Image (cartoon, rainbow, N blue to C red; front, side):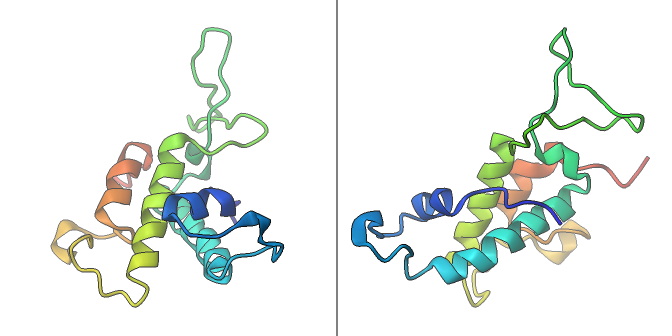
Length: 137
């Protein structure tokens, strides 16, 4: 299971939710939804990319090149930090799911004739495409 790729604060800010931290309540009215969908979308993004290590900023060698493992995959830098493009894709997908909670948003859906494996919207897919491991070798 992948860690959450964005924080609750990042999601609130991206969605422009009106919530006052100083209210003393400690949570916003949309937090239960966000607490369900942040990990769900994080997992969906990880599944679509296919290699979890590609989600994170890679470790660099002395020449500034990514360190790779025996399979040729990047070794994530510790502590794990999601790449900016991954955070952007998660936030874009989160906003689409938030806006169309009942699945009625048709303009951002990847159509079935585009191929198999598109579980995310067009914008998220476009951001993540460079990171996805090809199934064709």
